[in-house]
Amino acid sequence: MLDGFAFGAIDNGIVLIGMYLGMDIEGWLSKKLGKKANPLLGAVIGATGFNTFSDGLAAATDPATRGLTAGIMLGCAVIMLAIPVIEVIKNGKNKNKENDNEKDTQEEGEEG
Image (cartoon, rainbow, N blue to C red):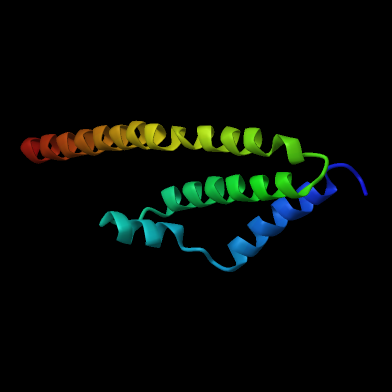
């Protein structure tokens, strides 16, 4: 067998099964957090979370990558720490846009 074959097959197999099972990450998160569902955030967390899990299981199973399992999973998890930072930046930009739109609407009303 080729080195890394088991890793690739297990990694993508887990992701494929998870996606076809229709994991509703954003629905589950919105219920747990008591907030409105955010499909993009759910997709991002679902994709990175499934990737971390599938990479770890694949690395632990494939003899060619078995010694790399902890590093692979830690690398995946560290990148996930960027998600809340990106959300704060993104939401701040969206709020600025909303405020600008409200100002434009108010100014148009005052002119008319």
